[in-house]
Image (cartoon, helix red, strand yellow):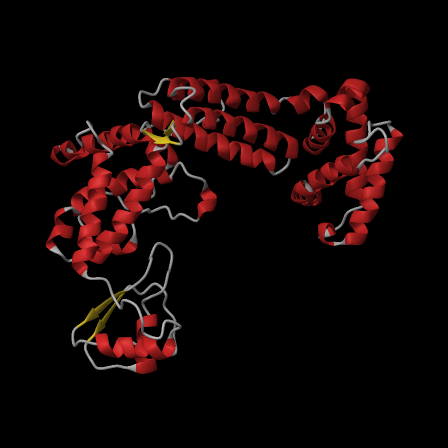
Length: 416
């Protein structure tokens, strides 16, 4: 392996069979001791005994000056691994997950779904309150177990639990598909180093679809359709149904929040409130599924508001920003708010250009323009005593910023 002149953070293992010291040794180790994707660090296999040379190099090239422990004893790693293995195994309680290994291949998927459904329902006491956090605790402990396992192989005790670990990872990968996409996860959740060892593991390397993760057929129709929502409500594995519904609703809400500030915030708060009450044990899985299905129907109904009010997508977004002030809606009524929304769209679009959000002069001009329109229609000020419109103007400009990409696409489509 070249030790200079290239960079390959994905490298995992370095086998040392010749003497090295000082800078050369540090540089060699740096080739594999890099965080990369799902790789936490590297593995050094020492055939000749470089411990003292490494300690000397650390004394010169690191802030620790060679003090502290150079490496962990493998027996300590094994002890840590077995402790974590017991913690994860105990989470299954009365659910005998060992039955999995005797099942036929077709039955194994359903068993994994049943196991995930069981884990998702687990509760734990926090601050004298019972909280549903089985999924989070399971994922956290499995990650710790994976790291300890990676430090323990090829110890015989590590190899005896590898199939169990692979089963735990299969459940963890199911849960991962329900998590937010912004968490930098890969489609294949099994850590690179572990996969090299558990090469005959039970987990498919194919991408797991979010619907597959819940054990439900991917719909050919809208996920907000009554047919699909009814199918969700009828799922036997209520906890997985909940995870699927949370994920789908979160994606739908995020998509709407890209163009409608108020709608996105409103539905996001409703979703978060329902989930919090469920996690705190105030409602059960059947009740929260019922509430989330109603939320899905509310989102679907919100899509029709533009047609009912005869407003375009951008006009409806400004209308909602204006109607967010309940006093304004009560005093001015729908028709006046529609007129203001229409004029705001026309005026803001006409007075913005590329990257206007970064230009203070353009923003200052828009603030004056928006304030003038609000006063023209006698829109109630934020503070009746001073006649100040700062909060309302900021809300309109925040909404305009969200619509920048929408307007650009609309203009391109018009030209095309």
